Length: 441
Image: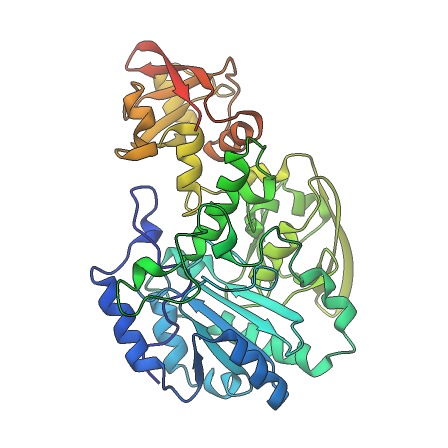
């Protein structure tokens, strides 16, 4: 087997906002080398998910579709390990395996996952029923992380679901994708007319690829350009388990490693060592499935769960308060960078710690967002051009001064403002308070 899990639908572009988007210097060379090595591989169908469904129907095997960015540094360790791990080979051989190198013509009704990840896997039945998702922020954050134990557990769980199919088909309904306004990415305004269904192998192949994160970016721009408030699940997509107060062990399907005191999960009675079997009525085969259950959860209200605790099965209910999604940490997401342009003019903001606030004379319950970074080009230079400076501290915006995280403020502004508005801002610059106008885009 050659250099695995190719270039996915998200040939990420490096930006000052997100180190996760760092890519190899010769991205064109990496893609072409990957094609030369992988297109005749015996195990993997190369860049043809439709053929994968045909083969799955012919063989009766479940279908595994990998989406992976070869030029992206993130998940490189997982990339290499999946190819060489002896424990995975017998499992992979029980699937029809497909590797996609671009997202141009995927069916958005089928392919709904965390578009900000550089490594994702979807498990299907040949009839199109989705068994589950796999995606790892552990590997995304650490390119050198090589463990495949969690991936192995997901493969095993997907095979178990396939063995029980179609008796379990009704229980899989919550895992299926929701309704979408466009059939494929290249139909979404912002991408339409700029990309074709097929890659340009005769020209610049990387430039002809719709990157996965561009799907989320295009959806958000579609709403923003129309002057509509952005749906909360587009601002805070696929919330990680920590959003409700649990840390799941990366080497298991959904085993609780720890629970944050006072969190939603803690109040529901979740304990360390619990293994989530279902969440929101959804059978889980990975941590990504947990995130999908949160993605589809209500904006407030009960979210049922079932956990295995020792030898017992325990039913729990997570009570989701209004605004729970805003607690999701979106700071490291590639998709957050365009949102920063929309409402921050390209600023990267971090909430000052209580200790830092004390030294600056700021109250603990008041706004205090430190300008960590400032965009320099295009829409991301808007804040700089409006007079904002790196190391300013935003202490008031549009008359509001209550303490918020960067993510919380992004959400509020994307749901309450329209492009063209200008908001009065006050920043602390040294010991001086400076008033500026922040344009919304």
